[in-house]
Amino acid sequence: MNEQAKINKQNNDEQENEQENSSPEVSSTSDFETGSITVSKDGHFIHCLTIIGQIEGHYILPSQNKTTKYEHVIPQLVAIEESKEIEGLLIILNTVGGDVEAGLAIAELLSTMTTPTASLVLGGGHSIGVPLAVSCKKSFIVPSATMTVHPVRMNGLVLGVPQTLSYFEKMQDRIVNFVANNSKISASDFRKLMMKTGELVMDVGTVLDGEGAVEAGLIDELGGLSNALDFLNCAIESDNDAIHRD
Image (cartoon, rainbow, N blue to C red; front, side, top):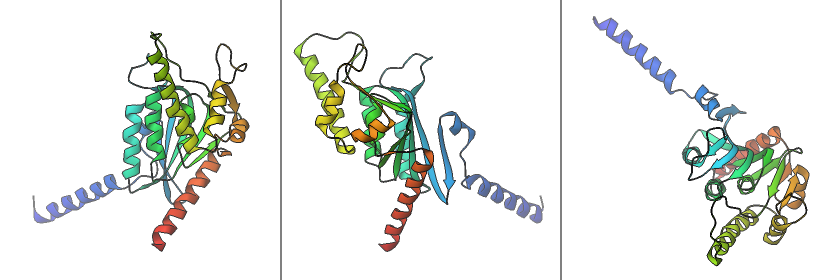
């Protein structure tokens, strides 16, 4: 190979590397399949993460169940927080609930992120979906969505001893305190919603529609996708302005 051919080959290789390393406006098809996508809007990269179906914890659920696996979500949140390109995070919720500790683990990570975050409840944000919905900097819910608030429950064999009741109470305290610290509702009012009778068949608790969730103080605003994106863009602009002033 002569000298000119070597130079041409080197230039072609450099161009291919630049194309591979360039940031696309929309993530790859595999991201669509996992419900995760990053798009550029108004010059800002906002990552969208969906939490749907049942929150899967330490036990694998049957294959016919639609699940969100916490061991997949947690590394994504860490990567988003560390990313220099992603400036905002939108969490879209349509979940029936699931594993309490797995849901709280995700919610605690979201509440401690410095990246601007917003949550949007579509369809339902039930059970442990409530702490997930309130964990972001701003929470939105569409009018037709619902949220179910109820006490901690456990499936399978339960030992009828005082220690079991104490364990339930402590776990419930964790949820109540987190929700009260990350929303406008007080701990006592949230407990009242948990223990309300006469609304759920064969259970205690409360079902709130979009407007009711906002009135109770659980969710910040009624709104949809455009409202959540507008908030994120404003939050990103505010953060950028603060950095420039410093």
